[in-house]
Image 1 (cartoon, rainbow, N blue to C red):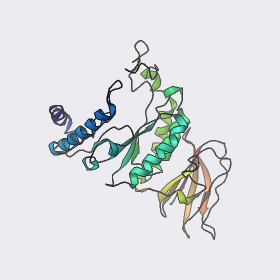
Image 2: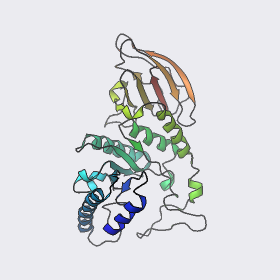
Image 3: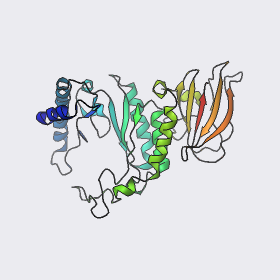
Length: 302
């Protein structure tokens, strides 16, 4: 394995690469007799490999490992990693609580490092996790402090073709036979591209999670409420899952006028929402969005 990594570093090190030590770092073989023993061995081994790659790579590229839940939990010493990659579930909306829990827990953990959800609810997997779930996962992660987000589609990761699907894994079940060229056209990827483009208009890397800036907002008791992040006096972005009434913006700074607009994450269209100015209580009530669906509300200054 060290020889393999020396080759990878020599072959690709001069490029702007990111090293991922392994896929499913501590997932034992499906039919292993002693999975706990194998997991412990993998955890020790990938920790050693992380140290080796760091010591060998003269370009000091970022290092992570693809996990079963969190990269931090996939090695014995998290300091061998530069960012935490997550895998948070493939169960449609049922994966939302675990996704938000893992993102927020990683951001609070030590050593501090960026966090990216590297695998969540591939679009179409189990014949669910469609585009509305893709939008939810993107915005819930990014507005909870993630440093980026990874989109996936069922059929692409297996490199299925219509004539030759990947077929069953060793456990005897197939994850799906959608051809890769069909999966590549699923609507979630295009819609997340529009959402990314919206964030790129602003210094999104400076945003911090501020759920307290909107009422109501998500809590551990209800993950289906709004998510909010922003930059004081500059920017507030709110993801609003389908809500009948618009949430109220609170803790607005006095003397600041924000240009407000609704962004439709399903089409990329924008609709003006007026000017957001704090009342005497530091609050502003947005107008009702024109269609009952999920929306992104943006307050930008200037």
